[in-house]
Length: 86
Ligand SMILES: [Zn+2]
Image (tube, rainbow, N blue to C red; front, top):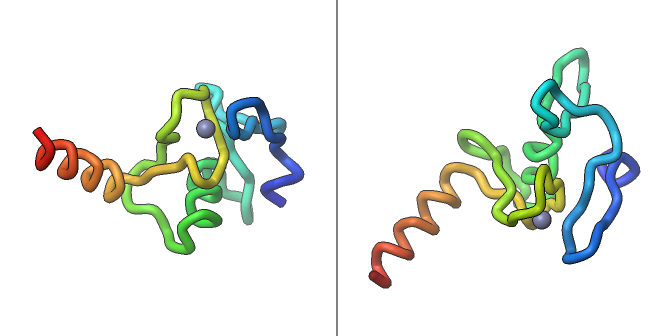
């Protein structure tokens, strides 16, 4: 259901080929509700529900590659690591 709605693109990214929301965000209709494709991709890659917003950690616009999705916890962790190095 996820892979047949997206296709791999150069650089290891994945492009959404179906429905998007008003801002171009990839979405999936599930039991009458819109879920962003990023949330579904995140759950596929990490095996848990995301905390807060899911955003791609790469620079490809609206990338839906599961391993490129990051939630708030991961962004916070990345920031903490940067702060330790600095
Ligand atoms: Zn990507």
